[in-house]
Image 1: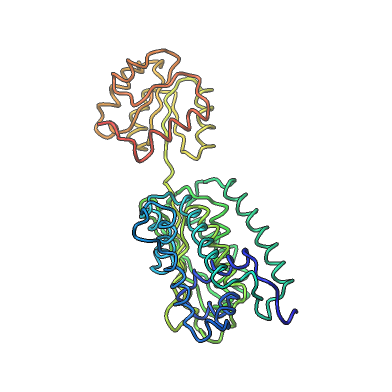
Image 2: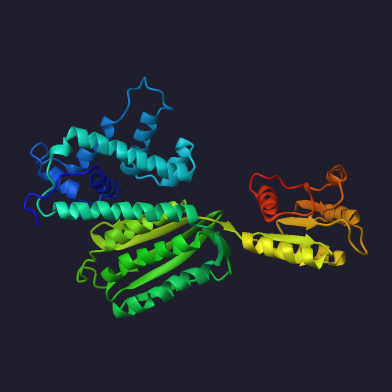
Length: 422
């Protein structure tokens, strides 16, 4: 190992700075941070309060009051102040700044880099040496690792897709996967099920790996104890709560990989537009409550009424591929019963039906007290859009319908912004 260490690089600084900001109020975690070690040993900062130094650096980025509040400079300052000094969640800051979660993740990264540029210039880090114990070789390896991780996470962000899962089955799957490790460490994993067969759409691959990373971070620290897991579904948010209960809290050896697992979990969850909340009990560093918060939506059902069996099979394949529940019937006499029983989010109706005229069925659907608020889309080869809309249809589509066209139609009419028919 090089006694004097290597030279600072921007990527190493940003990685350490991101970690330091996320552990701003945790002195135990800050002590292991390379940049913080260097800052504490720097002659200009020796004996200074490191936490205060980082907060002062953020305040140094506060723009002049005469600068427009809509400027990038103010947005950077508000992001750093709200996220790290005031400890607001990413979702809350995004709402305050009028950004989507995807935009907020990008803004968060830009803000940290702006702070890094300030520190780089303020401390002339290009001419400074990393503390002994962090060699140039390690620095190069870290840069390579960071570059590889960036490419992998970029690919995950582009390729992730949502899937329908049963919440209890999903979390029990996490427990089952970690069970051999838990048994080896004499840790009991206890999941309190919701018990309602709640199905939700979540980015399954990324969230599963994030959950496993969190459990991998906690398990080695809780030898001989237990971990309680529970879940809560609130509107469009799934919260998975993980509460360790170590019985020999200060006898368990610390897990060297804990922080890396937490960081990986956090990045995976943020890719999915969610948040990872970690709150340690003061004086008890291993008693940590972890909440995984994931934006989601319930599985929606679509009722298709069409006497053509091939059309029903086609729509079933389309809707299942898109993650919707398909309910179909060729018999118009069953339509009212099925709509009343399943309360679908959308009804797709052909008007050329045997026995009952499709236009007559549309009138019955519009008059039924339990069904009248469900949007009905008339789907036919006939060019009768004006008639369909005049009789109360929410929309009209000519056959044949592509999968992309069906997705756009269903998303538009089942979204929260769509007003239900009175």
